[in-house]
Image 1 (cartoon, rainbow, N blue to C red):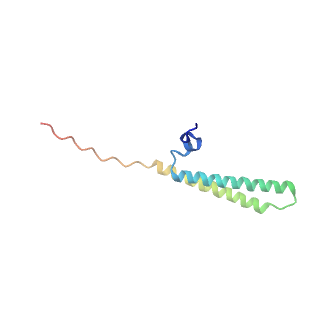
Image 2: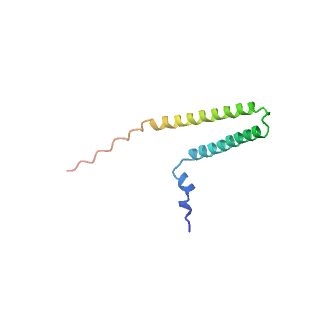
Image 3: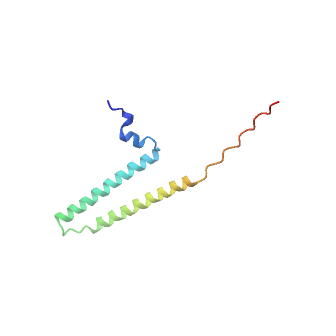
Length: 99
């Protein structure tokens, strides 16, 4: 019987923070939406080449640019946090004198 803790999805998210998981889900939803919109534009162009799809194409391009910018900003912010020095640990107490 397959143990649920060894499922690939469980091992994929096991060591990630909640924020990372939300970002991954959001990115997946946006990616699927962009692909569906692109496929819709392609179908419209194939079925009726005379249809003007410039407005939706411009909107799709602007959306992609915005999403890429946001993700790059997020990555830059996360790398900035990881480059900060960790606070130094307080000095250890001296051992008691022996006599």
